[in-house]
Amino acid sequence: MPGCPWLVLPTFNEADNIDLVVDAARRTLAGAAPDGYRILVVDDTSPDGTGEMADRLAAAYPDEVEVLHRAERSGLGPAYLAGFARGLARGAGYVFEMDADLSHDPADLARLLAAVRDGDADLALGSRYVPGGGVADWGAMRRRVSRAGSWYARQTLGLEVRDLTGGFKCFRADVLRAIDLPSVRSHGYAFQVELTYRALLRGFRVVELPIVFRDRERGTSKMSWRIAAEAAWLVPQLRRGVAHLREPIERAQDVEPSDRIHTG
Figure (cartoon, rainbow, N blue to C red):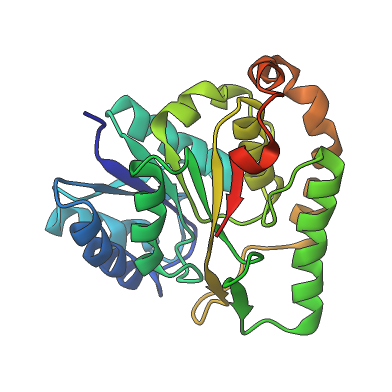
């Protein structure tokens, strides 16, 4: 039997959101995974006290919540990788990524888990850019930049996934074990692109499910032009950096892409 689902929540200065997002995630996962789940807060020594607040949540709900404190802030990618390693070592069957600022609706965790657990997908993506998905509260410029980033990555890597830069995902644990996580290079915005690309190279089934992304109401965004520039520089290099993962997908060339990548 697969292990229980783990939700990995990286945090840095999310004191305004941590109680709300953990409470909402607990409510959803209690219904979607009645046999058990874990919420892992990965805090990068937040100076606003997020880590201490997460510790109180873990003390109040020891069967559901735990905290991984990292000594320094080294980017979103390394925080997720540390969380993945903890979950896999503890027998996770499914692993979620989700923003801790409530931009992603925790109620959608149930749909993402169902797609992977029921066998429709190996990796379920919460997608802003398939029918039914969207973005709320963004201005026209930010919408154009986000769509352009996904389009650029899609064209550069030759993929059909519409929302390559989104960070709301559910992986079957075997996917994370197969895509050589220790060699992941990206730290920021490109991290999401790299993980999905690696999964596709291994021939895993990827499904995009529509979500509505909402801008944070509390706290400060961690997105910056430096992070976006890193993504633009790294994406073209991903083809060379993951050559060792190509063999399984080359053996599956007789499978049409539409049989491996679905939107819905």
